[in-house]
Image (tube, rainbow, N blue to C red):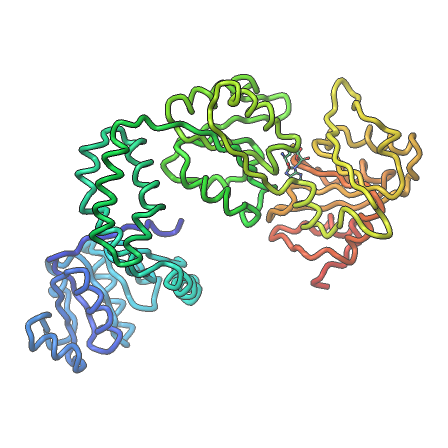
Length: 478
Ligand code: SAH
């Protein structure tokens, strides 16, 4: 984060704008909206500013900028077209530790002005850290179109009742649940329909009902997909905003974890090979305990919770304790990673079926139905197979697959760190070693792997050239 986003109160505080043109006038208008006492320093000012000065709304010093103008100011904006003046304003302000913004010159700023969506008292500020103001403005336009104007009234209404609700519902978790339920339900509909009086009555009525009711805990077993946040479902996103506590696995990427409600407590449940941070049984019991305390518990798992995710065991325990739960499917590694690697899992000509197995190595062997896997016209997707890769390839060959069968291993698929190695059952183990692949990796075996050559489309930021050469993939950029 380059800047700390804060909302700064300048109500009745002296603020200075240096410059008298149109840009300066826009900044003055903004400061006035936030209740500031604005002074403008500029030898000449445009008609808008002159009128404000005549009405006594702003003060005007009709002279060039001097350091003494900074005296007592809490915020300064320089908007002149003379860069030497702008620089002086910036330097003098910084010396006095007064926050300063120079329009269109991030280097001279100690704060920058975001694009805003104003639904006062609700305010959304968007910044690109000065990198692309246009992108921030485009995003702002999108938000403007989806956030109803009435949200301002809704926020104000919630504000009026805030203290009263706090007094009525002492428990913070319970109070937050009350607000979440109310604001996502009929109350908002009524305000949007302009029926504010009815909305207020409804709020008081819900509050009465809610008061003595102990919050019911619940567990959301949610699939977070294979790593790329774009592959989350809408439902996952919504529940991620409602959780009081999140228990997550190693496979859940930091980007995704960042999207969980900021105040939610975070518990790492680990599951690295041979380093089980929490044993499965303790996780099951933890879910029960937290839900019994009335918490909304987000159990966030990589991929899909019902595919090699032990999700079933976790909800069995919940069911036996009569704890409400819901399950949200996620994109499993096989489909997510295959899609981002440009390898269709089935194909009219090459594979009429696809099978998902775990290649978990135990005591040097893997317990799988090899004859069933070593069939032609079938794609085999192997989860957790990195350590057992040589055993896997050897067994498939021993059970009848040609050693020239195409095979791929993909590390951190769908993410910016995606790395693909393409070879055959004979070559893949050595190639993988050379490339130093690390978990999580997914192995795909079958004729469909050949299609990668023409169908690869995703270009991660940190593409590793060696992997591409081995992959004999010309790639879309060559
Ligand atoms: N429930 C998960 C699988 C958990 S088992 C799902 O549905 O995807 C963990 C294994 O998933 C890893 O060892 C790896 O084989 C695979 N995996 C998960 N995410 C992956 C990714 N982004 N890239 C490659 N493999 C991945």
